[in-house]
Amino acid sequence: MERELTQEQLAALVRIHPTYVGKLEAGKCNLSIKMLFRISRALKVTLYDIFEFDK
Image (cartoon, one colour):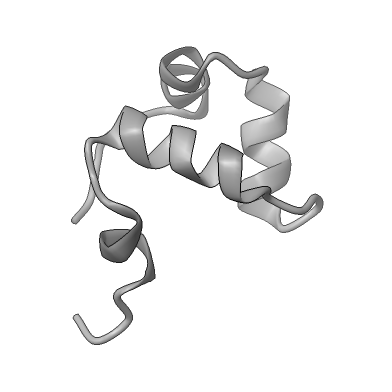
């Protein structure tokens, strides 16, 4: 599942700073389960969808 969102748009949906999204994308910081859940809710996907590697 692919979304056409900018880092700024995702940050606004999750209510976090856009630079944090960039750091996550670059693998420069760790993601908490709580933040992962917030991101999944903003993207309207389940945590299972995020971790399903078989697709």
